[in-house]
Length: 206
Image (tube, rainbow, N blue to C red; front, side):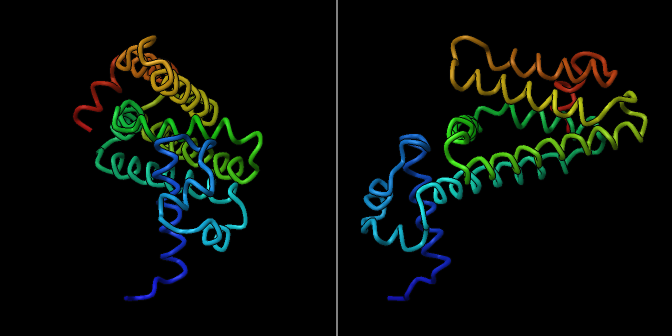
């Protein structure tokens, strides 16, 4: 049998922890859970991760980074900044991403107690905002959008998307997904001087 490299073994632990976290939630995932998922001892987990906090941070980071990469690819298929922005909003409205939003909800809850998770979630949140800000700045330069404070509009849009998406995931019977996506998009459309409905329409052809 081929001996697994340290990096491969570490990744196997992360994947096992991720599987448990999808079922039980990030904060409820324990070393014992991960060991049982792998059919091994808790000592193996401790050998590769100094603390459970670090393992949970890595689990969240890998899930969130994969989502960010997928959204970038989705945006790269658009031919205009309006189309790229629409693709960004469309990614957040995708019901297939609900489990990812649950990870974010868990991470934000953990951030006040887990410094490693706080560090990762803060850095990734800034990356999401930066991606949105870049599109807005380019759209302003090309004349597609109004002259606005790109930082302010991007943080406002991201906060609306986060809030609406997490409401839909946590309370699915309170706010309809389509309306939540539309409300978030409409706010950004008003800020950028786009006709209402532009981003939702552009997402179909982006």
